[in-house]
Image 1 (cartoon, rainbow, N blue to C red):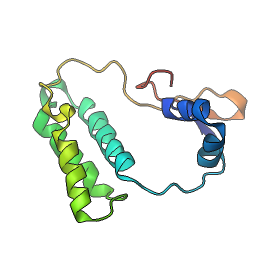
Image 2 (cartoon, rainbow, N blue to C red; image 1 turned 30 degrees about the vertical axis):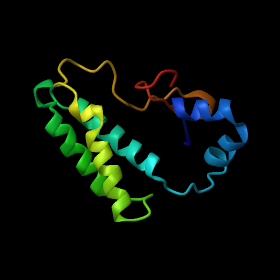
Image 3 (tube, rainbow, N blue to C red; image 1 turned 180 degrees about the vertical axis):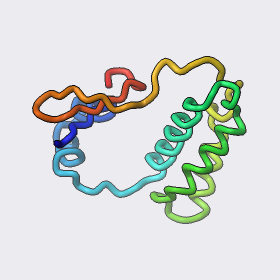
Image 4 (spheres, helix red, strand yellow; image 1 turned 90 degrees about the horizontal axis):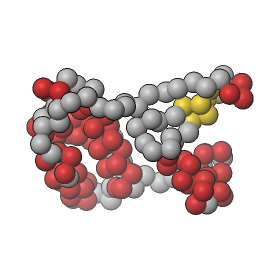
Length: 131
């Protein structure tokens, strides 16, 4: 059964440019990796993993460790080691690493939800507005 993945980004792409949506998500034309997407992916992964930890383990140091771990898995989109180092340094200096200890419980974590619509599933991301 095919799963239709729906996210805030996909919806905004569709609203902004239907042809781009078709090329990217229907025809699945390859998109060259770039530093913005790579860093965004790593920050998203690190935050997701951080919020899955108990509140007492959510520290700035742990967030930085999770970001480094995500970075070690995917290093695409950079023109060379110097550019990669600049982006990694930028990501480590972002506010999410310097935030005070993140206590409490997250409102929602990313998960897949199956609607059963149209003979397949729909994966949505409740961690983002509208999707």
